Length: 378
Ligand code: PHE
Image 1 (cartoon, helix red, strand yellow):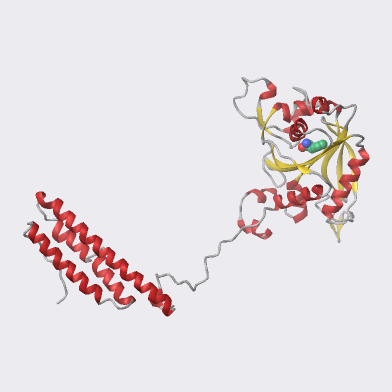
Image 2: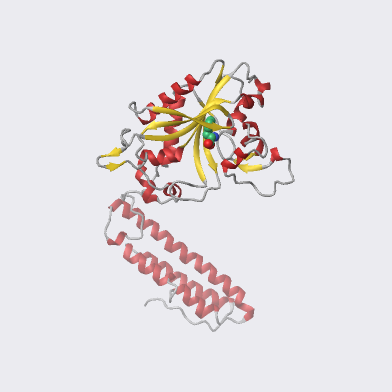
């Protein structure tokens, strides 16, 4: 006869003991009868099912109606039983799994158990972000020329972002930078006030403070400007800056270096063109264009106008120039006497180059984190 949980009326220690012994003996007998997976499931459910399992029943029939003064002892007894039941169920399950592995049983019976012959869960490893990929490729071009990588903070002081780069306080050239300022800085002297760097050029000064000339550095990093987001603007974007300082560096070195770098990056058939411009920290200053690598410089794609170069055959890639002697004055004590050294600097937008290179028509796609977009670079 199968064991059934009796209703307890006598709550004496001896009666509790007797009822427990009867239950545990039934547990032992039924456990011994478990021979396979199906048996084990039935055994588990009979003893542990929330609804009407033996454990649930002893809660109902033994504990619930126990008089106050014996509730503690009865509770302890029931907990001991619970432990034993759980232990038995667990124990038999382990035996089953060992048998299962040996038998390589993959039938429906195996569901819910570990099947070590199945392939593992695949975790996609991701892909390099197109802007980072572009940055790394460009940085590599300069590393091959002997440039080292330098970096600096994104939260910068007014001194490094502006003053030491020859933007005097209140000079209108500062307005061109659409600066995002950190709040609560009014109590500090102007040069110590914090802002989000608007370009990677502050790292020119920071590096020249640390390293004596000659130097050749390339500086990748994020910058911020108060531009509302649209297809070609983002308040956060990426720049790649370069600086070379030595004795007798000329504008010819600037042109030769950048022309070589563009041919390395875009392909040997691109041409470069330099047009006069203005930056407070370079003199003279220039904008550099490369011949359109999409239409080959013709301004047309078949019978259609070439949109990326606006039919001009040229694409603006960067700003550059010879380091202004006023900039060297700020780091003169570290060997940068403007009478003895000269240098050139350049800065380009990595996002813009990635847009052009990959034919992406909206910069926002780079920063929305949509894996359907980013997965294309996997
Ligand atoms: N910092 C300039 C900008 O963000 C670019 C630049 C860098 C120009 C170095 C000249 C030299 O617009």
